[in-house]
Length: 332
Ligand SMILES: Nc1ncnc2c1ncn2[C@@H]1O[C@H](COP(=O)(O)OP(=O)(O)OP(=O)(O)O)[C@@H](O)[C@H]1O
Image (cartoon, rainbow, N blue to C red; front, side, top):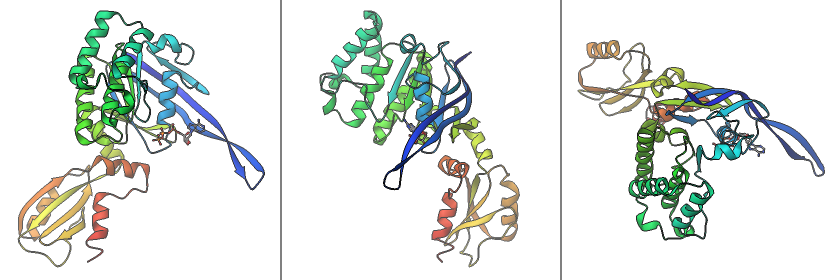
């Protein structure tokens, strides 16, 4: 059953631009434009796209902070902007760039305030807080004022605050931004556990594709305010026209790039050559063709990096292979 429904939603902003010294011109930005998707209860969906694609605007509309200019939104059966107060009990939000905690208060007091605002009954509050303290290792931080916490500690504190009232839907806007690898992993493990244990629906916006790889079986790519891809991570490779790489170790360095149909050399280093070929093609005929003409020692196939796939989708992105070619064959 769909817990988030977005149907033909558009959101327009009017912006005023200075033209010359005195004149100002009004223009319209369509931040979201004909957006439609559904998220089923319990799903964990990655929501990604380039800067300015409309991700934050979508989340703000789903929380009720922004009213859509056109279209229909439902979250847990409610219209977010019209039933904002009722919906607040059903959703949790974490904006990585801002905190919802009280800057001068210790974490513990921020949580106590959340308990009162949401009128969370004692047993439930205790259970949820204990779970967050345990999984997010918040114990030693509870009495520290929020302004004294590191970014990673503050983020863990924010995530806990968003979950104390047991929301059905959790929106995460860049929850790992600026965190070190250890903190990122801790946050990811926690989110996976919350989703698995409580069935919390999660909509995750991030620029760190490892978040998506680790957490989401479904990813929506948004560009210019519209969904341009909706499916599994593997399927992105087909849409993005991405390439796999065959890494070939020859018995001795060859003076020229290996020449076989269906693949092209993107990098050469001593006896090793890297050949790019369409991710949807099989590597077997290429391996056979190389083995028939060159003395082979070893080979392996490298899957495309998801960053490269996305860069191709957005257009104008160079792949790792292409960058390597610039630095090796072209520079040789
Ligand atoms: N309050 C606003 N007034 C005017 N324009 C806005 C406003 N909010 C967003 N926009 C514009 O709408 C478009 C989408 O912005 P949005 O913040 O939703 O993108 P985003 O995908 O979240 O980008 P980022 O990854 O950079 O955070 C951008 O062109 C942005 O400049």
